[in-house]
Image (cartoon, rainbow over all chains, first blue to last red; front, side):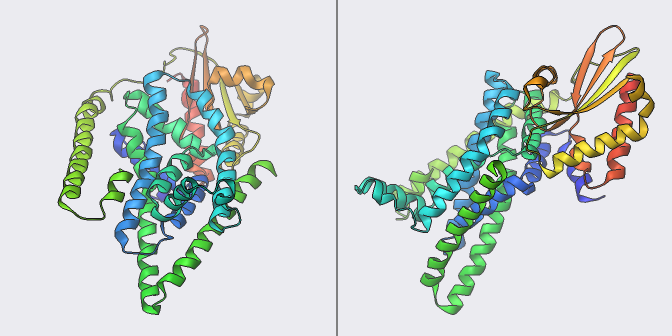
Length: 236
Length: 168
């Protein structure tokens, strides 16, 4: 049995949580979420330290995705918002928002745009500090926003497969949560592996600060490239 | 959660207490959710979804809905579907018993069709008209798993359409 047939049979599993998990894995590796997930991996891995913080940041990113998916599913299952309308709306505007946002964040990271210009009071600096250094709040927000990026195929997986499942069992909470966990799982695992290997490497070279400085720039560049990809896809 | 973790770098007794409460709460909520939903999962499985049309079939419609901007996978689903109906249902297409079309959901002239089928974006939807005037529609999501294998795809879709014609 090849991989796709396996994914199909698991995605149609009669126990909805197993089905939701595998639909989530399909989503994680489909082109559009893959692009956002790679960005998230870069963001989460930019601070090189022990694996614990990385794991937590990855988990918080997944929680952010969960927030969005549970919100959408609950609106549909419990409040009865029109699936077609919400699906078409998000497919129309989700990617545009993300493209612009990614390029903007990337430019801030590369210090091309200095947020202090806008207002040099401490408040903005604090927000910027938190977003870029601590990583938890930033990861959560990234998860929330990235989950809103529906490309045609990820929309099929979410609105065509997961939402019917949630509706069938009138569950707008647990099924989308398990789905969200599966979409974030590759991010958690890959970030951990990446940070672990980079930290080992930089310890050997005794150049942790230098490596961190470079990763910041690399991450900024990844944001701009992925953002440009979205913008190019839609407007050019 | 973020607040909690940020303040808890100290490892003090109070912080550890907070953390325990937090984890306890998270696990509690999770168990509560499981207890609430698992009975639903076990019971809700028997209900068949959608109305089944029994008796004679007047017409079957196969529509590939898509947006102006299409993903590679979406184009493949459309192309394979078209090939399937052209290869296996040429007579039905000619007689009008089977209808196939690519429908751009962004075009205003398609709005009635999009609304009738409640297309939520790229999708393959199959509508069945019974002789007595009934209508039922189903979205086929299985085709998305078969885009790597054209033979698989066409055989599968052929089977689905034949099943619709047989009225089961």
